[in-house]
Amino acid sequence: MSSMNLFKGKLVIDIVAAVKTSDEKTMTDEAHEGFTPELTNEIMALLGAKGYICQTFGVTLENKGVAYDVELELIEKEKQESTRRAESVYNKANRITIKLD
Image 1 (cartoon, rainbow, N blue to C red):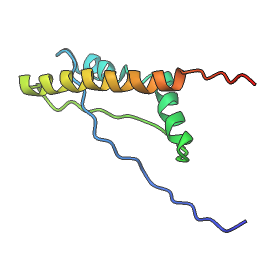
Image 2: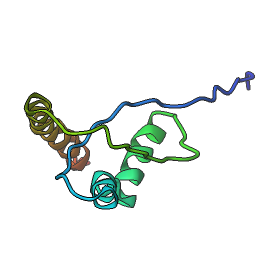
Image 3: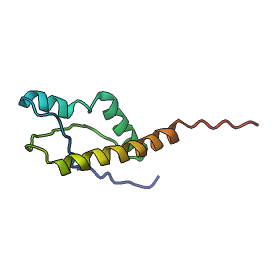
């Protein structure tokens, strides 16, 4: 077997979420609520299937102030487009092929 080298680093993704204005704790909780163990496992599984093993996974979102309408429109547009892309990925993963001999 040939020798191999390990590359270790960080996956850096800038993310944005909009939540209804409230007290800081409520907003922080709402901003993070989508990162369920199920979502974390799905992300780690997708990366692992490509050979990228996640040793840790975490999300830290910070309040950046009031959202402008244009930002909210961009988030909604991206959410709709991403929902279509995610459905395509899930449909592809859930297709069952049966081979008859």
